[in-house]
Length: 261
Image (cartoon, rainbow, N blue to C red):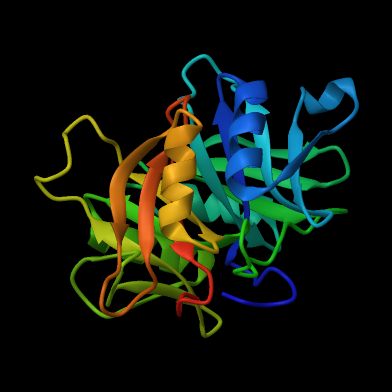
């Protein structure tokens, strides 16, 4: 998805909840060239903005709840966070926190879909989020991994107005099951089958653009991360890999300019 501003209903932010913000800053700076900047003020709780060429591209935050796992969250833009939260609960999901004002930046909801995948809803105030531009170091694609694909399709259609094109399973490698909103594709759906360990929950996986997927995988390993899926070149998508940072957060990378979004 390449636009000048976040598309209503589309992804507008990626946020890492981590047990060690300092270590995460070092890892992602080395991997993506981000320039992290801690947001001043006690109310922000040590929240860090990762910048790319001066533009915020992602957030790094300490864990705010005892039960919160380390991981990446994806936020989707909404015009009215309170109304969207009501749609979540009416459609079989649940609201974990919010709606709550985040200073004057916007209004936030943390929710979970019927299949158990956690996501965020963001009503812009002073901060609209970012439109995934697909340049190296930026968010460019998001992927839902779920054991309940039909429920997911109905849920997100109601809550965010999405359409799911194609049928069956897909992955960031290509495939046919792709999310779109307002005519723009921005993500895909993977049905979690028996190949996925039972303990792995449904989740959203952000993909960040990189100039060289193989180099990114090597750099992640050199930074004490892990390669979960080796770099691969599927027939109808860009070269990709799935990585894990030293604190355990999973994310994907894909080749910028490789036909995604």
